[in-house]
Length: 381
Image (cartoon, rainbow, N blue to C red; front, top):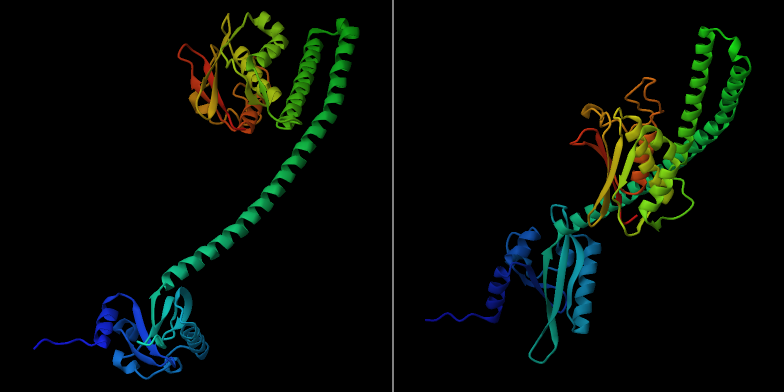
């Protein structure tokens, strides 16, 4: 004999196999049944045991029970379903859950609401993750604000240091220049009466004063680097370099040096005076640290989507690979002899200017002897 399933049996079979937590109630919010998932979730031994209970008989708090019943009433009074809303629920063991719940009114054959069907998914893990993300975001925001404050403090400290360096160097330059001038005046007036030792000591003192003056000038240049009163400008680089080379004319002629240029023909955006100082410092280095009878400096370039890259190649004495990581440090001199003068600030200025332009600077060997200084500047500064 074929077994006939009642509507109630069909509902139970569907509820037990749908993968949700399902329950149904009468018009007074009294439970008429549930699936096994719901019973287990509520700490009820058997799903049959829920029949006749209401929310106040369940393990959740009175406030939660009142909230559940208020939603039931709203759905049954309106005859409209409420779908996928979030709500908390407390289990029998005290564990707090977050649910995504839907409730739909049930109608009889006359279209009258006789109860409701409810189902939910456990979204506790998702809510916990959202809360953790929100917590992390708050901490991140707090840390970002802290970093912003630290950066502002650092900027102020750097500005104060640069202003102090500039002011101190500027104030030192005048007395040092006066000392050198006075020594030279004494030498011109009384130098003929000096014996050889006195003359050498006097000349040594003058040279030391000149080196001090040059050092102070370099410190001033370093302190001014990056302090631009204007925005970047579109320029033809070769025009800037040609102007700088005019100033180097006497040195180039004296050393029998030659500079060749292969630079972009189009205008590029940069801080003109700053980028010009990079080329001049590197050209000066190529001439100064060079024992060739004919010093040569070849300047070339390449281009990518994001950067212009320049190569300043010389045929000088070269730089040992072990020094290349710190040669750009301030006051770093690899040759502490009178043969090669300088303060060790020039390459520091180069690195600082290149950094302002969103690029980097590095050294490679020149296959024909000497050094190649490579530096890049961003196209999007």
